[in-house]
Length: 430
Image (cartoon, rainbow, N blue to C red; front, side):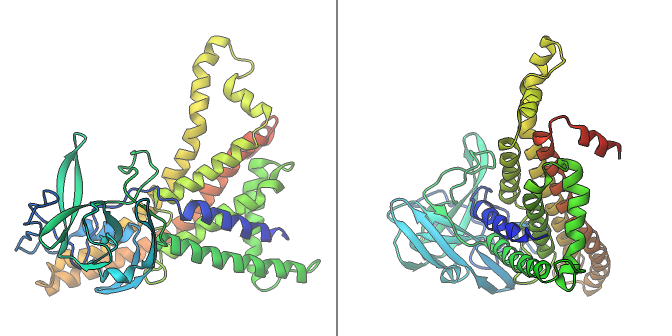
């Protein structure tokens, strides 16, 4: 398996596409433990009563806490007020580039060059009258407003008794996920990007060590880390690429399928470790799964042969009037396949994180925020047992989802390069 160096190069390519694409709409349901407050009266710029805070304690917010932990953020929240800052790379057309660490926000109590930390993510004040540099802010307030005949959460930063509307980062989702182009672009190293870089470094070092092992043990039995990785390589080759793509073409796509498998797997495994520098919900982020699916879509269709395109646009052996019906369905299928890849991985990984966090939240719900020790103990026992069980299930899911993503990608590629689909029929029969 001397081609392991190619897996490393493909990992770098995936990071460029998957790591720095600002596609996912910003989560607006997170719970921050600093100056972010629910406000009533933040009507817009010029409102002097922009930080009216409700006196009653709302207690533990399970939905907000869960959404905060599964959402991407510009810092790692370790414990209470302990945060690990991450580099911020921000660009506003009328202001230029701004680069600094997220610790400059002082957990949301400071604005820097018009940028504010809101629920762990950076927002920007588009109003040019807002002061530049570092200024202390009173709070970040929130209210629901009607935008294009839809209710939408809108955030304001309160500075010297005046509310300034905040813009979220620009997103390339075309409004599908609720985003769009705003006053700035965020190219920062977020939790997800950091975890992907860490995973890529680990895999590159691993692949290089395995490649050295193959060179050193050429003609001999594998040893060391090479013997540990050998079953993974042979399994993907013998059970995924060869049956799905075929003996004639599988070697061309082996590095891509192997890279997909290991990249998804290590991101899944890192997400199960609940402490820094792990715990990020990488493959539970639509931006990441979308880019991985798009890469599969591109590789599949640029390698499609005439037989493949004929079966899409004008199926042989079928009456013309039926072709008129089937052709749009086949063309739609070109996009449904990568879409299903994206949603399947995103939904399964996110669901696992949500279930585990919800089970842990039983401690606080049963304990009624510290008022009931017996309730907290009961919640700890029930939640702890079910969480341990769910972690075992999630460990299986981490491997299973990586395998499913790899085998489906291989099947799509195999359909594009195969000249007669014979090996697919054999694989399905087997």
